[in-house]
Length: 97
Image 1 (spheres, one colour):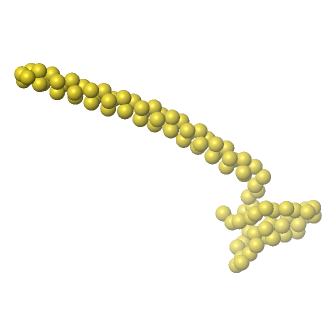
Image 2 (cartoon, rainbow, N blue to C red; image 1 turned 180 degrees about the vertical axis):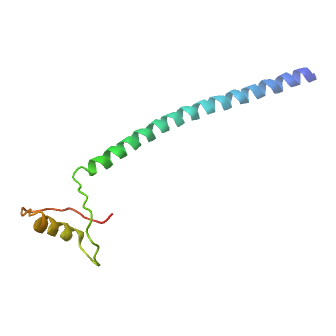
Image 3 (tube, helix red, strand yellow; image 1 turned 60 degrees about the horizontal axis):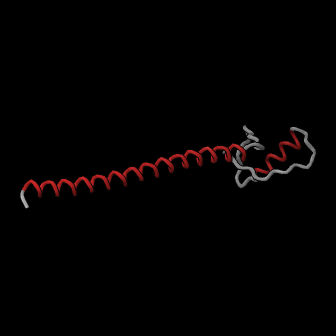
């Protein structure tokens, strides 16, 4: 086999390798595009879920901190004594920010 023929065979083999790599890169790019769209969707869903969980939240300011306080009791006392709300008050959780 002559040098030209050998170079042509080697060149053909390298073109095949480049085409295989190009095909794989194309597949990875499509997969990455899909994953990015899924991440974006999950981010929007996360923001929506976070916003929905805050719908019935209230933030109270200006309460002095006490050692071993129960934040639920502090808020209930404020609502009952200061705001004069005497209905049954349910507070799921309360914590300081």
